[in-house]
Length: 266
Ligand SMILES: [Zn+2]
Image (cartoon, rainbow, N blue to C red):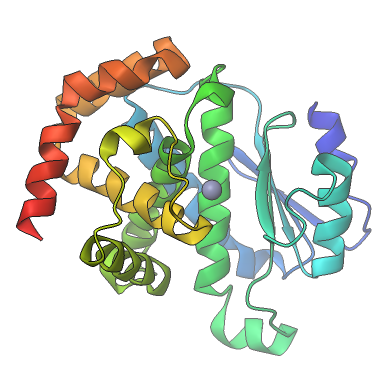
């Protein structure tokens, strides 16, 4: 599977940089500029290992592809996922356990020289690598609901950004603060689906962006209101149960009650 991912590297100008846990393939910048990206990815490894509560020991490096143009990204995306993520400009592939991100916003070499790799790109690289990390440790990955997958990836990207100094706080991030506002608007208009609906993936009344806001904020809520021991216990159980854990999650964490309290406090 890894060979399939590596076969995507068709450009002779691509740099391949390996670190302890990742292999970064890119034509975006020189290796000096990319040190900060490698540092982000290794910090993500530490944070993800801590979040999921165990050592992830593997000899296989996680492949991260960082494209300089939308065309290069779409060429690779077409080969792996046949257009499913053609316009999202960032995705991870379960089969090859690899991540793919295009430089965002588009930046010339002189801009990169001046400001370094843009924060938006660094955040996306870490977010996607968090998905790829998870693919490697949870064989039942495909059975997990979207709120969980997007929730932990967004959580870990912010945590890593804060640790690495390119994010002051979750609320100061433009994407996260937009989603906070979106969720508050849904609450104000009495449209927030129950936690049960979220857990069961029944969010038909919400737009794609609103769903994402709910995923992110609900996961953050869980992380910020749950003891570390309880988190580790739940993540271990999730790993064991896969899709069968939704109902247990509900009783174990008293999610409905917590959510009601949360809504009342708003
Ligand atoms: Zn994601």
